[in-house]
Figure (cartoon, rainbow, N blue to C red):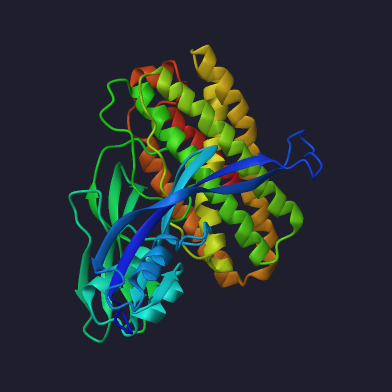
Length: 416
């Protein structure tokens, strides 16, 4: 760091994040109460790592030490964080404190870290900036992240990206993140490095979703609902981000409100599917979603084409099928409500598509059509995987032949 401090410490703090009823706003037409996001800091912090000796060159060591210990104003601003949970999330974030002489400082943002680091000329600095940008630098799998020196300038960090459902497997991915010598962070397209078992669940997945899946459960019903609960909880993040991005790009209030209402629906879905997973002996893994910058309109629309117009549209149809065919009464009742909500979510995806269409060139509309076509190909491969008999009977999931027939019907009606 410039200037060189006597002491540097990375601290982690926690806070809770949940939706609470917003009684200052009128109810939605469907009777639902609007909600607002409420975040509360949990007092204290945890030292993650440190280097040097605190207040080593301070003229007044006692005052410096006291200032260092109290240098936590309880603010919410931080970097390199994530949230785990559904209706009530427990979140973490980080900040850095330093001492140099009698000067005690705190750095809460990625930009402040970048400025104090100066020229990025060490692998550790590049990795830390990637971490501060919300990427999983410390891999949770046997395939480690790595830092490479670019031939021109700067570094490229291979970070853990998580699972991408593709073909008949669930692929593990890595994403190259380029860190320039000036500290600029540029993400590149992820690539596959490993594949695992099947079990992908259709629905809107948020950008930045990290790997975490229910595995090794003896009961296929528990595994399926545990993975469903994780992705339903992750969808909360997807719709909250969608609302922000719609506002950023000038979408009407109705679309923004529909995105928020969808996030509220997903809270209930996560709770219901969690209850079903626990009933069948499985503990749903908590979703981890990296905090990444808001995207351009073209990126939002491309994501909406894949996650909304294809995956969520099929998810709605799938839920209706389960509501009709599940032999288990509790599953049948749960899916009936979820199907109703998911149908609205799919409608929102197509409303966003229609809102954007007049703003796009023919070439841009062609890109979205091709994205939907490719997403449909991926979804076909996922649905072609045979399922445990109990999932078809008790949970009402369609057999591969029926699932492909459902996809054919949707393709003719919506995606042709």
